[in-house]
Image 1 (cartoon, rainbow over the protein chains, first blue to last red):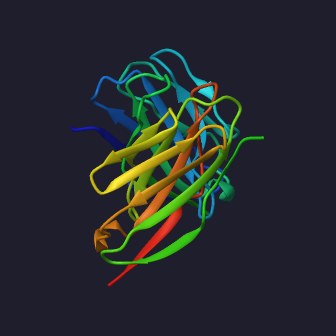
Image 2: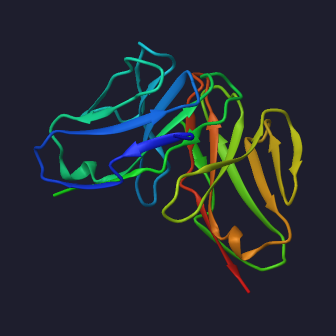
Length: 114
Length: 109
């Protein structure tokens, strides 16, 4: 593994189903993030984690949950998917959560909720 | 509220120069980032400014004016591979990035 991986690459999901998007990084970064990207809108932060064992809510957290049991993994769970959660989801990481810390992005998961 | 504004789309000619502007309004400020995103791919880091002035990195330069809440990305000697979206993002007082919707740059031969 080099960098950040996400799984699955794409998924079609029936409304009401539970879904977990996986994210793993091998850079030993402390901070990790989940964004969604929708056409015409900027990336919007869903949840973040500044260090293993801690998580925080971003701009659009409703309907999503995260956990950070260790440094490398940061899964995002949709408890009961709705069509408005159709989006491209990006996981990102940075060495720390401070001012100058560029974020590195995974390849994304394209999710369609029907 | 927090807001980032940048043009939706720009067109330029191969070999030319293009300037992509960005204005920002955030609660607190901890730097301005530019990212490049090719269609269907992840964003990749281009530049970071926290002090006023110009930062040059090869064909790409980025400028910041904190007093005006303004930044621009300058791309010189445009190549076809520069066709992409360019994302402006400002880091707020909580060290979270606030993102613009991106500027789609179309390069014509």
